[in-house]
Image (cartoon, rainbow over all chains, first blue to last red; front, side, top):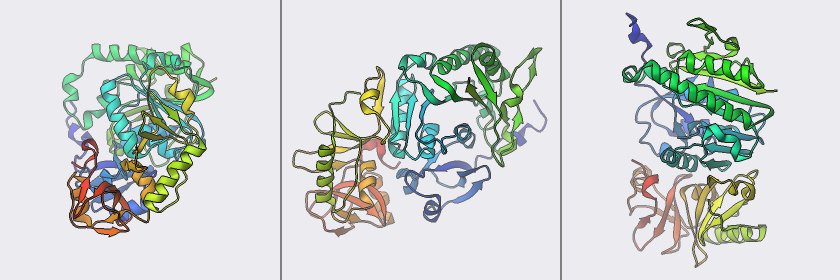
Length: 284
Length: 153
């Protein structure tokens, strides 16, 4: 363990919220709320908030959504504000934070197919989509490894894959207790199947964003390396202003990963978010 | 999702007229459909309801708008009320902060200001311009209709 590891732990005092512009403008929300907020330098609708954020009338009305700051980043890798009329698949959508964020980016235009295989988790997705007033969302329950069986070709796919969540260590210390290598390997196998499923549901020239909240190279760069070598996918560099990011890991235990220099790693200590891995891929 | 009927323009117009009669405002609605005899749903303009409802594992399309009653009234959902409520001119009850919280928590309320309200009818409860929910105006109180899952905890 690092001697100064505590500095990596995120202060639990400040939570993150996202303004729901489908219901209210940011300016009007700021006039109404009575808890302390700070702007997020890298996302205009993200706010750091201190106080009783889950017990306010504004939250009840769906004016804002409580969402981990790091989880607001992957949707920003898709050009949805410029291409509002597109067909988007959120492959592993529950509980719906990113789905409703994308609906907001598209201003309820186009279509978002929010998919999740777990019926229990779909209930939370249904609740959040309804509360957000996200009318362009269609909820489906397919196994994302066989997304193509839906028979829809999407312009954009967000694959926020299930993972070991080791990027949450900075907030949830119990993750350390669950950590084991066999679990990482099993998860990586599943993620490779998921990216294959998503690839077949993507239009030619379409864009897929692969993300996890894990910091393990096996679940991230290795999955991207697998996708580049086996499918017509090309990683693309992408940058978000004022967000501190680092390149993917190019080599890990003797394995060299293709495309890692175009992947992005977000470390907890850099932006006070969870750890995240994100890669934007284009189908050619 | 078992869709019973996709509403055509004429049928949507009828819904708009019911809303106008009940809430004194014109709203332009599009892309609506019904599941069962009463449940009304609304989807985004670009959502192809026919095609998407044919997906084998389609669970839900758009958002729940409200329930169409036989007496030509609509029991709006919270989101349906939000769409209608900002323009509504009648069957409105205005409440202060304290009563708004009480109502959002699922309680009936006794202190409110009526705007052109009809007794025993559905009304929209607002705090200033914010829609808090839907209730029924009884003799001296507003009966709370916010579903349990949607209440403030």
